[in-house]
Length: 87
Image (cartoon, rainbow, N blue to C red; front, side):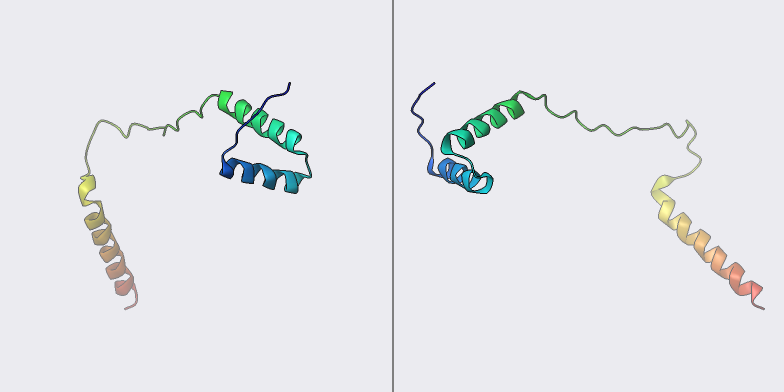
């Protein structure tokens, strides 16, 4: 089929670059670009990522907003224990 196509300057530059890199004629480069674009446009969009979550139980025996303070206290106890062992 013959038709006249008006290309934007940026599109023509990309097409000419593709011609040089792949050693294609203008017609072949244009046909491949159109086919590639149409095939990619018809693909279904990627499935959104969903993070799996797990229940940690119903009981809240620990205050998670104080986790760093608890970790510091545990670390301090361990340092004191190691220092006591050196005696």
